[in-house]
Image 1 (tube, rainbow, N blue to C red):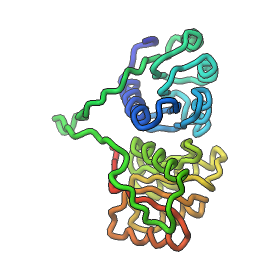
Image 2 (cartoon, helix red, strand yellow):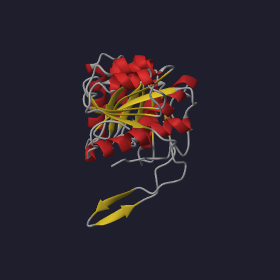
Image 3 (spheres, helix red, strand yellow):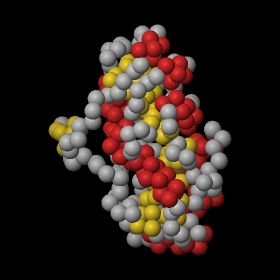
Image 4 (cartoon, rainbow, N blue to C red):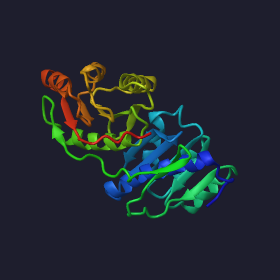
Length: 277
């Protein structure tokens, strides 16, 4: 639509951004606004709000440090107020279904930015492929969020917790494994991804939340790794988290279940691991 020539990294991050926003274009009510910031194919900020400007502000607040030089994506029209706010930071690409004329005038003031118009998502199942060992590997697309909703904790999730956990699990789906997403008020407040240990991912997520002064009391946790011990629920609980969603399937699921039962915590097992690589 506008901007410099698109690089390989721009295309890869752009693809990741569109995959992520399409989850919410199909899964959420149309009037809800989702704004996400992508860095190296991982989300570093994402939020759902009532207006585009509010969604942008909340997404940026989640990790303003990592947002520098990122790829931005929204599922609604970029208006003047949002363009003015976005214009204050350096970014590579902005993807949205529409841009107001005034917003375009503002965003075009810096010539190296890439502005892309988001087309209607393809509803057909796609088969992703990647080069591997001098060949190409194909697999079915990873669709959906969870295959079951099994309440296994010490109490049932509240309606608000369930809404937050569904959102957190979708965010976690698009983070590199081992992935942890901490969500509060439909805003990503901490994440850990691409670590060799799920505990390292959790510690990274908690430290990110602390770095930007988020209170984790009332937050929820989504994990793409199952819990073979009770260490993750214990560490997260000590940080203030009382609701969890994870795939389940470990031979020692009972360890985490028992901890949640003893401490009155909610935990959902989904039966689905996304395991993004």
